[in-house]
Amino acid sequence: MSSSTSASQEELKAQRVPVQWRDGCSALVIPLNVCRRKSLYMPWECDHERHAYEKCQYDDYLRRMKEAVKLKLAAAEAADS
Image 1 (tube, one colour):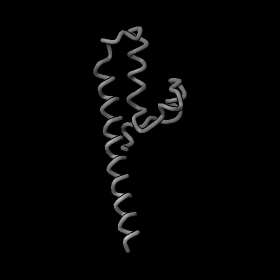
Image 2 (spheres, rainbow, N blue to C red; image 1 turned 180 degrees about the vertical axis):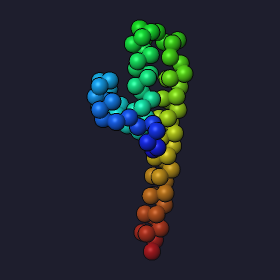
Image 3 (tube, rainbow, N blue to C red; image 1 turned 120 degrees about the vertical axis):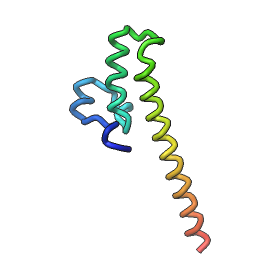
């Protein structure tokens, strides 16, 4: 995951981001939470921030699944040898 979507531990601690959300998309969850607090968690607000965070999560999921498939194929090839 690129460093542009990862926030520093100091930023995450200052914004009180829970540990389970401190992943590769942590820099996008900070403005999302700020917007949510500002709009009193209205579901129709903060759409842009929410979609950006969800897209980052989805892209990270796809990257991890592609990596898992490569590892599985490599393990199968090693077992055949």
